[in-house]
Length: 162
Image (cartoon, rainbow, N blue to C red; front, side, top):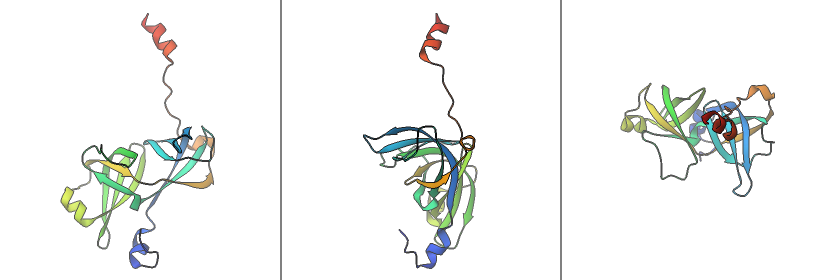
């Protein structure tokens, strides 16, 4: 965590991605909720909002890292396929990597060294690993958040196969 009094904090604290999401389900036994957004699903600490509610998600770029291959043996719950759409070289040591997760863009703050070591370039496919997700207190209109695709029920599917 950066000390809020340092110049480095001033350089990095404004990189927060904000977008709408919809509460899909709650799992109180494990203390997690699942949110649907235009780029997929996010697992977050239990949200105080009803299933189906539209909420606003905030992701700090310092809580996002990148992997070039699908991350498997990691404790980070949110691992999503992404494309690097922009690399913005900030004063050392950081680079802002803007990522497309389908219909949503998020930023990751990574080091210049990581950009070089991983040979990151715009257009490259990668995996976004999101360590923490915050939920803003802002209430959204229900139409502002995407709806997940509804799959046919098994009854309908089974009848069609007969």
